[in-house]
Amino acid sequence: MVVFEPLININKFDHFETMKTTEIQEMQRRVGTVPDGFWGPKSIAACRMHLRKLMPSLSPWPKSDQASMKAFYGVPGDEDNLVVLTFPFPMFYDGRRVLTTRCHRRVKDSLLRVLTAIGQKFGDDQVVMEEAEDYGGVFNFRNKKGGTTLSMHAWGAAIDLDADDNTFRDSWPMQADMPLEIMEEFAREGWISAGAFWGYDAMHFQATQ
Image (cartoon, rainbow, N blue to C red; front, side, top):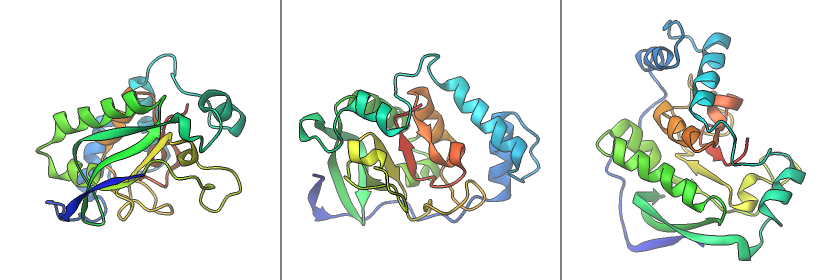
């Protein structure tokens, strides 16, 4: 269950288009590769290495296969494992202010630390916060898009941000525009950023190895 404020609110930031060449070049410098504005194999590898270096040496999370997920998180959809998380900064869904969400009890503290760090470090940065404040969901008992196995959302162990600008099929960062800064904060807690590690579905972050 997601709790909304009773009043209708509009996000204070306008939507941005896909990343500009200069933004991609800055990301390339940040991850330690040639800033040529083209996000090819070298940039992808450098970005993954950059995020891996930020992660804990021993991952606190399970592998992403169904057996490992069940062993660590328990039965998917088990209401006893779901707890309420209160967002540390304003979050919006379809223009409405979101106050809380539900997530798996084992990820609550970690997810709260990620979001708190984003708010504290980038609260005045509209490029970052426009993505971070656009809530796309946590717990949702469903299969993976186009698949036959359960999504990480079925355990409440994943969160989506700014789904409109980071759709499932858009390549990151040439089409999707999820900021690297957000991915770095998730990496510090050991979370996987789909855009960086899969190259698509940049809205998606999950608590797995």
